[in-house]
Length: 284
Ligand SMILES: C[S@@+](CC[C@H](N)C(=O)[O-])C[C@H]1O[C@@H](n2cnc3c(N)ncnc32)[C@H](O)[C@@H]1O
Image 1: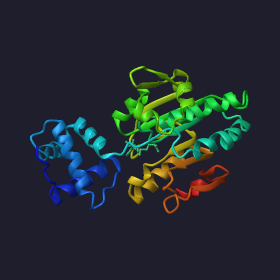
Image 2: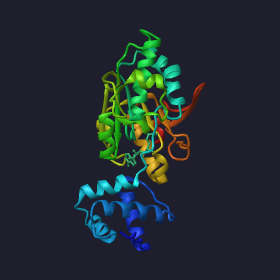
Image 3: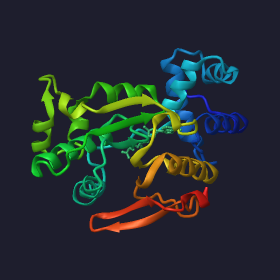
Image 4: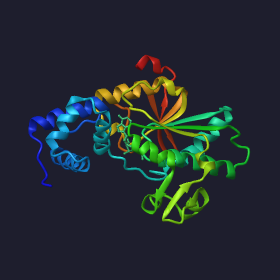
């Protein structure tokens, strides 16, 4: 089927719709990317053409289509122990601090968890920490993984990975220790790594107070897609569900500077993290 071009007017309507639905801001120059992804989806869903799919989308009543479009436009790129330092900081600096304060349970939110690698990497880090330092962290770990995309949330819950995704960031030692070989090229996360983790759908534009309070939030490699106003809004609302002195991990190219003053930058030997200021309420 030939690839249809989006008119400038349709492109503008589409990008406003996408920003309203999930906060993702598309620049003026993403015309080609949007056109090719939407054409692929309209073919897959057997629409006669792109215009018919967009017309259906505009009506707003086809929620499944809206989900599929958001899925097609989001980047779910992730890997095991991504950037390494957050997990090293967790084991070397943060877990000893939380153990001293007798925090129990330790609650961690993976706020754009994609297919689950981040949340499972946190769980593996905790398992290794407990094995290397018996009794040092007697508390329980509770991890909540959330994402806007039902497809990736389901994949995270299943915890099954093919050979291509399993090798991204995972050593052979960790692979054999924390995964079961399905003997079909795939690997499944072992139940002891899954224990204490819950994955659920959540749009970061919506309310998240129902998740409860957290000691640590991982919100990595998602803020980059949002407008300045949305970054401020999300960072301020995260401040409200962090416990006093709680920590926020952002992606390598993300920072609260210029968006929300409720956090202070803290340097540990392993890298940089953001801590909720004592007087954070003055800044939101
Ligand atoms: C690039 S991945 C980051 C995954 C992981 N945090 C990491 O750093 O490896 C970004 C994720 O953000 C999710 N996302 C995009 N917009 C969102 C929104 N409005 N609410 C919740 N999740 C969103 C996407 O579905 C995608 O899985």
